[in-house]
Length: 137
Image (tube, rainbow, N blue to C red):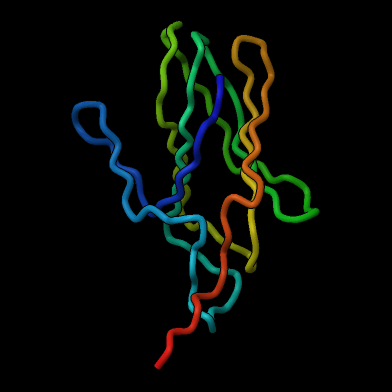
């Protein structure tokens, strides 16, 4: 198993035909108003992981977040089953009322146990929450 990418967006929708629609996809920086009061509360926030399997039949794991020297925080647990063949799929995590406590960079981690093999995938400083740059008048 391998986690190749993380995507951040406002919403994930399941569509007909085995499709996902990612709405409001963020780049590596999420800008907030320069005079915003922290914490910033998002009514809905989604993280989507791209998973590649090498024939695993079941995967259990956790999505964690870390900032600077703070301890890791478990955001969500997951369990999914594979078909025993090599494949790639998107695994969405949806959070209602997600709060960003302060400006800064966040590291995301996925820990997984696939058929008894424990793995850890880190995305250091993968998302940056920061005030929007001021625009020239």
